[in-house]
Image (tube, rainbow, N blue to C red; front, side):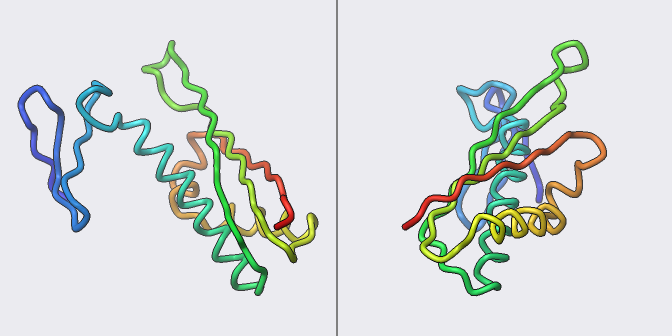
Length: 129
């Protein structure tokens, strides 16, 4: 990926889905920490969905919410991301979902990349379809 400075807007790159603008100014584009948190949250949820489907469970819907803690005294770095998955299914048991969340945690490359720098926790909620 090549990022080019777009004067006073931030940095841009072209992807197969269109132009992506990243900026420290949230009025001009995605902020870098939003991109990082989004990558970790969506990667984790996508891996969880694949794990459940591989085990032949029906996933009607899945969503993930990310709560973020940052250290203002240390360059505002990310210190903790708490992911909360909501899974809607008609045939998953709570214990099976708990195991799938553990498996997904071990196989999400985005989360694994930052595991020594950012504390990532996962919780889940199971709703019957």
